[in-house]
Image (tube, rainbow over all chains, first blue to last red; front, top):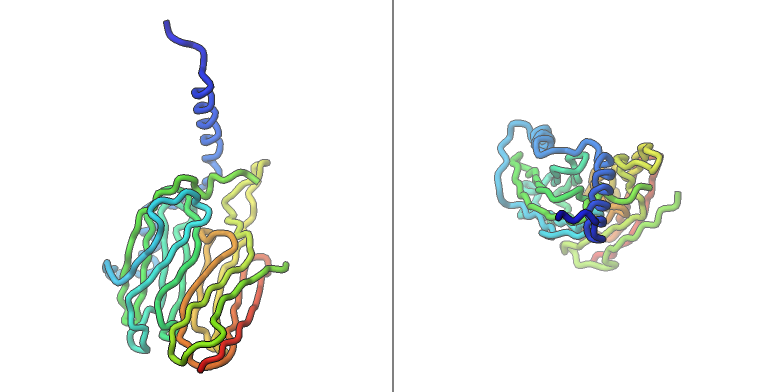
Length: 155
Length: 107
């Protein structure tokens, strides 16, 4: 005979699913991989984006998406003639594709920028560096997020 | 709106040395994508830009988006060229504006 009584564990699972489903609409319109690509294209235009030179440093596994340490460093001598003009970071799953844009110059000495970001779920991040000679370089990294930023408690 | 800003700049540096500057400012960075328990959207309230001037010349600037965690922490580098002042400027929604300064002695 089939068991009809719901165990405590099952009740908790069902409860958890209900809560998760209820929280989903708060995510709103999430940016998709396509949107990240659109945002990148809007920035660079038709220019070719090459892999390399850029290093996007993120923890591979994140417990809390509300604050994720991120470092972007670009190999560059940072001289008047050869330097990094800007660093841009894009994501796929947050409601907005942009994460940060930084404008640098030869006076920076070193093209390394660190900050703390929010991530609404497991996704791929892309950093784009714009050089003074007009070339674009990129690096991508996958991040697994256990607790997404947008699913936090309602206020 | 009193926002506390913390800035870490070395007091002295050798001429030509690359120094690291760390900045942290207290701010909720409300994304504008969250809803209250009544279902109303919580309006966006973020810092939109941060810049640093070294003796009046802009050396670093950033545009911040809602994807930046609360209490924005930004670190960057600069070449210690001359003694003087580093001025930090944050601008945000709802007229948020904070300016901080740090002195540096270059030998």
